[in-house]
Picture 1 (spheres, rainbow, N blue to C red):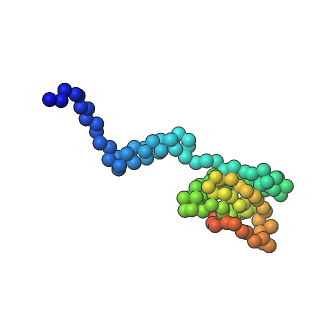
Picture 2: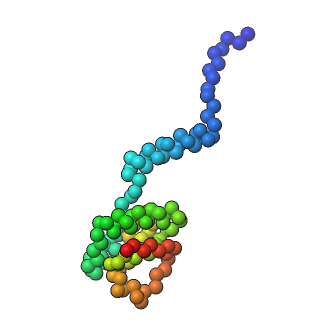
Picture 3: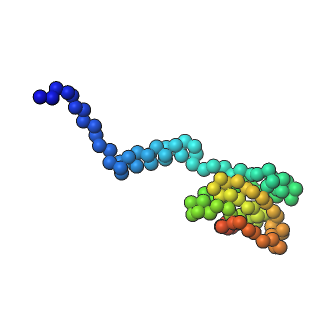
Length: 120
């Protein structure tokens, strides 16, 4: 006769394990605020200053929201066009790479982008 004590361990099915991970990830994202603010590279900051480009806080929030949406659709580098200016932005890390006044866009060719966002 076997006198050892056998403990019964509940079986966690793969689907149950994935659900636990999703709950943990969601909670972590909620703690971090879910949206990363837009960063401005030194180059873009200098260009904005030299060209007197000023964007309202509402436009920045709208840009953040659209970049989040674009990133989910696989956009890596985006041309963001507003009424005031145009920006090349890395959608994944939400960093403005460069900026130009809208009047400068007429003779420009934009390369290394795979998405465009228009903001009114």
